[in-house]
Image (cartoon, rainbow, N blue to C red; front, side):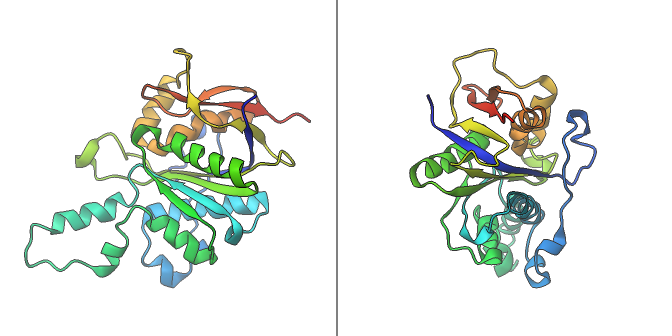
Length: 252
């Protein structure tokens, strides 16, 4: 039997309140109050969105953020900041902002999370194209399988400049999970991601369209499985090869 990890909490942060209604999934708007004003001025939409989801997930699971190993998975990361800097480069007279440069790296959000919570636990930033959510889940699941305890997985992407790679980034979306090696008080169990051998295992057409516009939306099949408390194999991406996990429903 494949080794399992367990979901202690799951939270969605999505500024578009209408987006998730068709799947009856409840989401939260960005809560700027979770970040001190001095830090907030320097943060982007993606950082605020990811920190909102992560903070609420920790509260839901009743865990202390300062102690959690974390994985931050994002296809684009700080894509708006990076794009703005790149557009300045052809202008020889332009002065690049040190703050913007500091905020342009892919692990910016993970860094702000560590500073905000005075967290010295290991953190990893991952980008893996269509496999980003699957690889984030594989990374945190492998760490927990080896070292035990609890960990945080945050998957997020903000709005992209649409001249870059439309329709990617038409929708901002973030989701955070607190995961554990213990089944106690868990919402469901998961196997570590693996390549699916079932060619019929695909997301619905409507979900695929959302994932094309919001890469972090790859978490939707998992969120639906949690909502309906069902046991089944679910896809974690939309391009072949398909990564999958088996969700084991919580039994009362």
